Length: 630
Image (cartoon, rainbow, N blue to C red; front, side, top):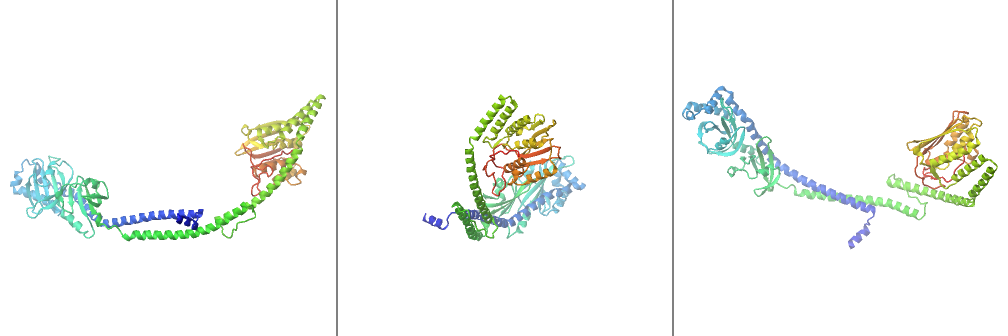
């Protein structure tokens, strides 16, 4: 515990220290895992190299045995190719008695000559055994003595030929006794013989090959090969055994050898197993090497690899610690700056220096943020003063709306009593319009805004009874519930009645259309009124392109249009706004308003109009007053 506490004092577990520790641990785990795999792979590769010579010897043995299979048909082909030879083998297989071949030297010499021509083609042939199916007689030709004789059923391979039926067969080694020399180990490859009248299974022929040539093949790899070499049939019969253990019977481990394992315990010994599995042929080649004879690789390799990895880990840890100290120093600068700002010292700035990296970017943005925060606080302070003044004015004028409603009601009653019903109705409409305008809601639905415009049109329809325009409203129902700043569209309606309506004309037309265009809503106010002169239209367009109204804006014409334009930009940003188009005087006017579609009230400060950190207008704004049309 004391050691851990002391380590924490020397090496505090801050973020960069933990990061360094985790990365070092990850590196060590990965590095040692790779080192373990590399050492293991190197040992396996060394084992494969040591076994490769034995593998080459095994391939040589199996290739040799394959050639014997391939040459078997070629050896038998002369028996049927030459007519004289065919007659000899045909007579032998079809004769009802074998007495003549045992007593007649001429017939016997003919068969000897025939079989001698076969053995001349391959010096590895020790004997040829022919079984005659018709009589069950076994004829044995010995290549060394060049004699033919009949043998009994106890003779090697005679028993398997008796039960053989069709096709080529292979048989394991048998001890073949000789008349002139010592017995030799031979393996057999057998096939079927036919005659002129007995097409199939007239007889069987087995060629017995000496195993000694295989010993010579392995002697060529002496000093490099290791272990035991076997050629086995798939039933376990031993075709060849480098130990010469033919008398041991079928191999008891044949199933294990056919399983494909490369290591196993055989006869109580751990062995490396190499197998050549010849597809399509009924035998396998096997090499068994005791594991104790294979060196397990370089014993010092593991120490060298692990030592190198450890040295690299220590070096990386030192380099990481140096880099961590540099990072920690720069992080401390940022932490110190945040503490100073937390203590209300917004004038503090982080030293940037000449490094343009992530920490430099953080320092630049932090300094920019504190500067903007200072400006924001100043604006908030000024805004709060303005807000207090506005609240004071509201308190002072708190009785004005009520007083105005009572006064308008008195005027309405007076007008109604004197028979001026139109005036009384206009006063009612005006009171309702004023009541809707002075409500606290800053944003209302487009449906309510169009209702206010309708009340305004009703008032002016009484004023211009003879020149009342043909009014059309075509707004998509889908946008009726979208929100809009209150009193945004009414100044445009007022602009038509004040500047566009042609007095004493009966064909005045005025239309409002509203459509959704993707994420925006577009309103079009179009009339056939007095139009706008080109010079005045150019001034209006120039004023609409400005960022905000200046002090003389109230003295200009089209103040209502400019006010609407500024409110749209404050609420929705510079991408939205209005455009005025007029072909000329007397040709009408077309005003297009583009705003963003909103279904919820934008948030933000009512007096600051939602300006962002860089002084840009933000669409998230609230407006607290409604402007007139001029």
